[in-house]
Length: 350
Image 1 (spheres, one colour):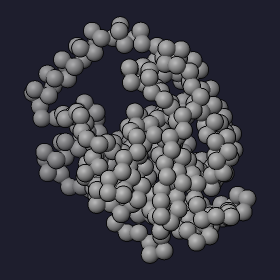
Image 2 (cartoon, rainbow, N blue to C red; image 1 turned 120 degrees about the vertical axis):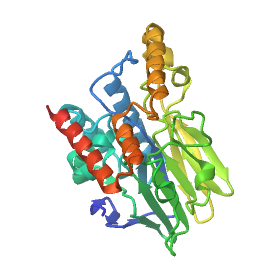
Image 3 (cartoon, one colour; image 1 turned 180 degrees about the horizontal axis):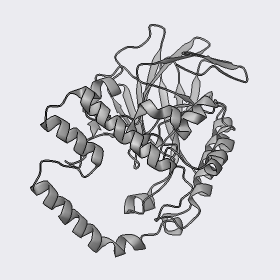
Image 4 (cartoon, rainbow, N blue to C red; image 1 turned 180 degrees about the vertical axis):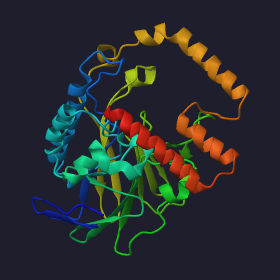
């Protein structure tokens, strides 16, 4: 389950974390979607790796300034599951400065979005090294600080994260009898409402039955302000990095969510980080040059959809659609998807 870890006076033993402190308030930060890579996204003018590592360093400083007990993470630490040793080493050096990091794996952290191969990824290596404690579906961590007990659960990205078992992935149905509050972290497309019929999303209304007092999500880079529905909070502070140059990213403030949990309340505060303006670091010229190509690509995809009931050009989505059309068993589908993820993993090593 959890790696046994000891840092300072706090102890984490399998499914229990005992915190030291003079009060009964648990303080934490939540950030998500860093997408660490040694390759500059084509939209960036600066050194992307230097910039995102600086963001992590800022979070480490805030963790200490706010006297946080630990930091929570929503997935996609890396932009791909097999970043270079040099990049991994620089990232590890920064993560060592955090008191404790607890989070879930994102789709970019995994080969073929297959959580079963986590051990062969860089994030899996970081878990083994004790740099991060990962949450897995079906597990729960009880955090105790004096007379306050907080339950933390998480669902990493996986095949069909927003399609197959929404309730099982998103909805917390079981809260420990000793827990005063519950937090659930998921790397999935959680939004207030769907705005694209071709995009699979999960809305707040879909999971309003959850017993989690706070649901934290990643994956959706723009994020959204905390929403309170009948005393249940839903929040996503947005990606810690800006990897595209669309208008919303040019203007978006990058930051993390500061969280205080007591027996009676959960207080949330968005903390913006130091960042340069979009005009300084984001290049939109390729977007203007690529408009014609994008129009032609959309026409091509539309032609495919008009002659087929397959709605996606993504190979894994096509496999899933074929399996559904042919009434193939779940075992056959999972076998095919596993083979695809293994092929992707092997290709990444060549």
